[in-house]
Length: 46
View (tube, rainbow, N blue to C red):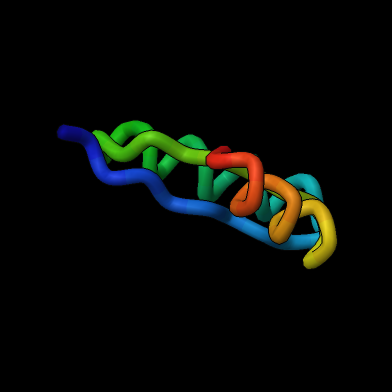
């Protein structure tokens, strides 16, 4: 089973850089731009 990581940042370039790095390392990545968006993703099961 692949681990999932939630990346949250308001800077899109930071989110994208981290997403690419983590996906290349074998993780499933979920992204959000705000804390509220992150909480929604968590509550909805990604």
